[in-house]
Length: 208
Image (tube, rainbow, N blue to C red):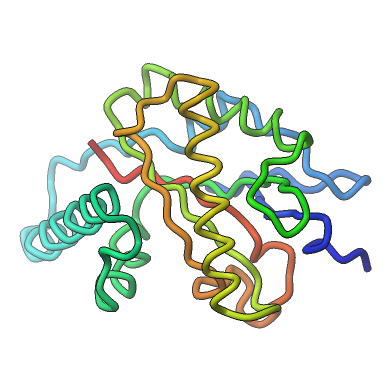
């Protein structure tokens, strides 16, 4: 099996609802369509009849999410407490999101040429009127091979690289994007720590 880490691959699979984009025969997924990304990331319709018993819990979730996102904007990951970092996956778990396949240079946060079509689709999607006024968390993830501290740093730098690329090439407002790295803490396939699916960048709509 090819050493994907050596190729600088941060794997991404688009998965929302029952739809998925699977890798082609060459091993590389085709770039996602902007319309598919818009559909996956647009806000969910608000339910008029919110259960009163769950309303306080939902308000707490929203307030906690806003607090953590604001801290990330102002201070970066170093501004997060251990509790904030633990809470972040839970408070965004109900938000629209996609996992994206991004290629990087070996052992680097430099975006590889092969990633440009995917990032172009994402850049166009984030400019759509359906997503206007929304903010997005770019969350970098690695597999569990290698040192955890190294994986954490690499995932952070790659998430920031994606953010900067979208700002510089598509005019996405910096205020709409927040980047953070989770390293190997949030494995997508926990029972296979080295699986390619674990190496990914999540794009999460965190609301207005």
